[in-house]
Length: 417
Image 1 (tube, rainbow, N blue to C red):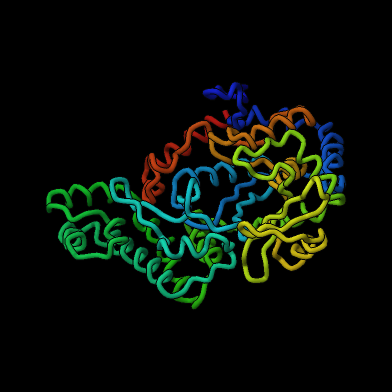
Image 2 (spheres, rainbow, N blue to C red):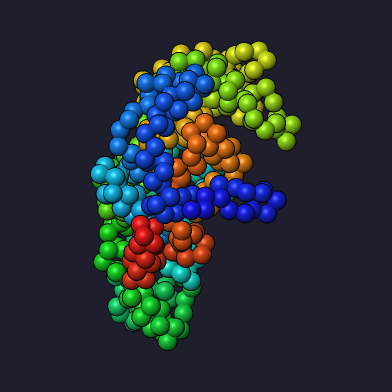
């Protein structure tokens, strides 16, 4: 079974395990437990963190719009894997991570109602700037932020209700709308074009499509000041039809298992690429935490001066590791470094359900290489071989189209064949 793919200029790079049979060598290797204990000890982590328990399937994303068929497919694979493994699926979201609306994270802050309509930002530019150092769980929605979300959900719901009536749908699209709602619903059309659009939209399960949008409106009405995290937890639980938990307690457990943080920092520095942008080569990212005011702080270790630093923009201050541990006890931990998070999850037998493109970044390649050398298996990223991707078929209604169910069933059958 192929576990690497070719990449331009990258040589051989790891690819997620895309068949049930490819996971079996990892699952059936009972000798991996002592190897994991030895690996964790290298990083100054308490080896008793390793539990010889049943493996679990794990899916986690940032709070925000999961209105993409590929996210729903990943959760479907998580559920199917969990059924095979005999454990409950872990579907989670990050509360104590930093809000971002750029790069790949822009997909959590905007959405497209149907293929052919525009992409509409859920967040105004002023909020995207103001929230960029805040964590998802600390962003309280009020005023114009709530108005914008409510306006978009109400507009989308009205369109889905009017779809069966060409006359009412035409009247809705012909009506003046705020820019963000106009982007979402699509431009005014001729009566003939509206009739064709209505026929296409009616192929979707519109009753099911309305429920998550209504859940969002209900949450905004019932909670006078919801956070970004709690609002999207409620919406996405309805969209995916399953409960969603916070990943932060799990990552906090990993951080508390670190017995020698300086040893961990030195091990993380091994093989760490030197910064190409003139950054400090002596600074090793080791953890993150949230201030009582709700701002994210990256914690680094200064290899030369042998001290921990908390970063805020261009400012730094020396801190004691006990402050990082205290943040866990107060629910303000963002967990250890990504490397420690990944290795700790693998040591617990967690299968991370991702996208076919996972494993291709330099950091992910480093994780996979270390895992292969220490454990003897590819890192347990798992994905369907084919999935939807945002921007290709990433519209909200795609997840309620009959083709989606057919494609998902076919992809799952191929995975377990």
